[in-house]
Image (cartoon, rainbow, N blue to C red):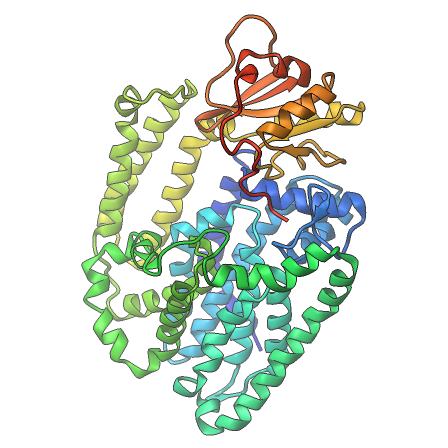
Length: 538
């Protein structure tokens, strides 16, 4: 079992990560499309009392399982509906992940007393993990479940390995509830390869396999306690998507996020930056590879990457639960050679130079930026320059990881004016919510990703239409509203949009449907494909 002194050794990385995350996550409103969509799904379930079946714009939503909405609902039951609890929840889950990585390293290497803290620092120092943990997304509950299962599998009593199989079963069940069958892949690689690294499996292979199989089946049984009622409550399309399409449809010729087999190889160089950019790391890889005591980390990391490479659907955050394997390997390297290379310092200095020169670069871009960026970005660049110089001097893993965390906070703060100006749908969402509560019907032209639902507390679905359908809908409902996505801001005379706001390089405009239909552009013949909606989650 985990003892208090095990966590006491992790106080510094846990405090550093949680403080950095708390500062960063409240700098601006939840960002589209990840956070706003996750919050909207939770809101629709809460508002309609649909506790078993996730909803997406009023329809059963097969893309996601309900653990994250349930965790959000648990907080809302105490605090009321807001985005405060979901953001605190993400910080809490991220902190738990950092602690789990340290605890797992301690169980794998009990004779290396420095390794748990080093592994926790390594996990805290992954820039992608930090930035992604600021989003309200399903991967963090999945990561907690996966690491919890591996901690149960690696439980030790002195020198003896005594897996806690009920914990493995719970991890499988909660992992499935967090993200679906992909949880079996994350846990399955270490389990299936246990004969190569787990002493209990090496001593009694058949007994280990039977107990592992029973634990997995028990976890699936826990998942079935939600799955069966949800399938019965959903419509036929939901059942087909949940049971077949969401898994089989991503394995070969994926309907979503399809990428070539080699896609993760170059991506890992970016995800593992700046650690993998250092000669210090690559000089130690051969020794780490040859050490039989490191088989677990290598099997887990390489096995999962190969499995995901063979699957058609790919995304950087699919690997998030397995960052712990890379953190343990990085910690082992730092334990062997405590003075790291200079890559981190130079990477931060390069980022500082880019931010200090951003004003000159912006002159060549035909995009309007908030005026305050002229101050915030160079100021952040100056802080990063000082930080980069410090990182060239202090090269221990804790110092470097803390420096990466601070760099991410400073970078995030520097670009916050841009995020607030071009990534915050709250003003438009509240306008739509007020109009809907007053009885106005609202249509959305294009692919709707729930970007308005939570911030506007929308209680009814938006009518999602393609270009041909939008014209017909506007003719039938001229007094109602339609939301469109435009390349340019509307500056013409005549009818005006009710509101418009910038969204990245485009503009979101809200029109009275009759005014929009009367615009000269809507008198032109429709283009080919105007009667098709590219993709809409179901």
